[in-house]
Length: 402
Image (cartoon, rainbow, N blue to C red; front, side, top):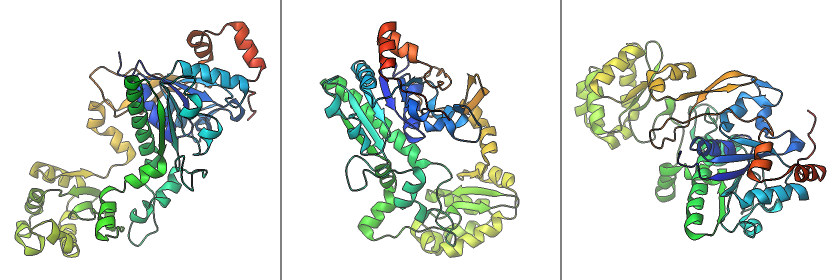
């Protein structure tokens, strides 16, 4: 058995952050029952271009493999009946809705404990379920600005910049999944569930880590440094070569000694201006131009060979294409494939969460409402008459025309 095969999660999730968190749990074997609102055509991720047709998109495939889908209007009385029946046989309710919505939709532990005292209700929202911003919508890009990330990303003479990836969404999803699994563990131990109130804002602020500690305790002001340089470890940044860019990182004193020798300037290691971390930090402007001149004289391939043999941490600045062509990518089985009726064979990055040594099976993301028969008949035991009555009462909504 996979590690989480005995875990069932009812997921009212959409777009990126929530589905990213739960897809790793699905890969680990958890049964993720994705509840999709029929009035909106389901998860908005189904309609994100490019590579989008009908109710399918490669964006949606990225975040929803190994899950099941049920179209359900949880705002209707009949839909609520189905939801509560699912809660009775599940371990957690997972949502990534605006911070005030779980209470409005009655998705909190207080609302559901009478249905299942051990249920864990995990809400992942932009700003959390408390505070002055709880009713505000929020997305990764916006959170990177609010949490200060953009102020320290990019070149010093350029505009503030976001990360090239939606890291707040992804970190928030992972934090939410961790909180939910911890909650399920405690609920099984104690017999009582709980709320898990996780937010993208919280995650983004927490990720400020040591620069925040320096600021809060020492008055340090984080700022953008040229070529993505580390704020205190020098040299640790991008360097231009004769034909591209490489990253060199001296996170230990021995690495700088090796670097000085590798670039043909062993005397740098004995220079009082560069003898330790603090000296190099204070004399960054003197050191970096000397290294620039030396490194620019050879190609990236040449330097990666020289520095690698010298034991200096380094790497190429790859394109996405080059990253997937790296032999390490293949060796670590980081590309997984699924068969899709519209897109054929879909290749995508696999989960980095590895538990045990058994290979992880992968199933494509579900079509909208694809698993209704399984959920309603096999899991909940509804007969044809009950399903028809629920449908007539509006449990499964009316599909919105797009």
